[in-house]
Image 1 (cartoon, helix red, strand yellow):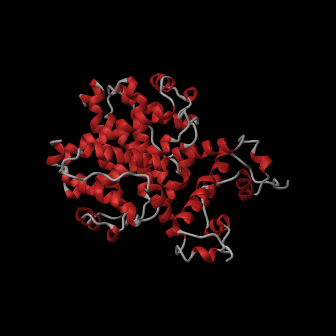
Image 2 (cartoon, helix red, strand yellow; image 1 turned 60 degrees about the vertical axis):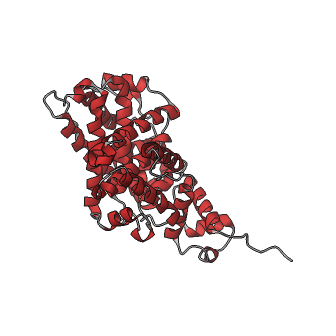
Image 3 (spheres, helix red, strand yellow; image 1 turned 30 degrees about the horizontal axis):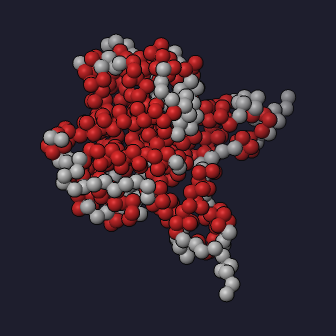
Length: 207
Length: 207
């Protein structure tokens, strides 16, 4: 029995190869993904219909690292949401160039939608009014995505030598560095956003 | 008198050419920028020392559309900051693929730093404690950047057919579309973030 002439393909392997191209070059093509897997483009089409489906498979691959948000009545919803948002930020920070591709496309991967399902359930159970649900999810999404990019910013986000306001110069010079700097801002942002939700629903206010 | 054999180069023209490449292809090279301007790469180096300086010139070009934040004592700081953040979001939304390149590099362009100088002055004057200044600026920055990507998301950000939580399905189906959808979330996020600053300084609390 001979070995198969082409390696076994799967949606996961294709997503992984595309992700490697995006991470290194900022972009991918179906032909490029096929070449990096040593197969013909036509072989990919047995698994995924085209570029949009490959983007969606990359979204699934990245979100696989985000834990489920506990939606049981007894769970502390804020702790549960924070844990998921932190993991979401970390997962996206590993693939910054992928971010604009993901945000440019409708979220349809079922295993990614489960995160939003959970978020909707937990926020609703906490008392958030339904008319504000999508706005709040969008706000959290936008903040996490921007924070993922901030997490991979250089240690010196701003060049203090180019700043003029004395308070800004001092703030830049005394800032924490690396992950500490980014984490402080991220946790503050989540505090401000979740803290403000109290005004949007009776249950949220009672937390 | 003959015409010059190469068109007149400037930092602005180089930034514009690089921006066009990033918008269309997600990436740029010095050679690609030179080719699109019909000059040799060596000609570019008379104006900009390399790729990092071209990125910084693109940052200046994009921020040129952001209005000055009034820092006079009589001005309403919140209105002034909101106006600048809205313009910042709009400017970045026109160049989504540029965003990960900008966040990966230290901000050093003097004309961009003036925005952060103003923001620092206005927030300090409003009573924000200096130890929190950079955290707050980072939070606003991250939210605006994520919101810029949300602004150019497709009308259907989530595919309702893939959602399971009934509250999420209803929320997706009844969501506003296009700019209205994104604007609602952006304004809510700014409300939550600026509203929460009251806890971070006495003057901010008194607004």
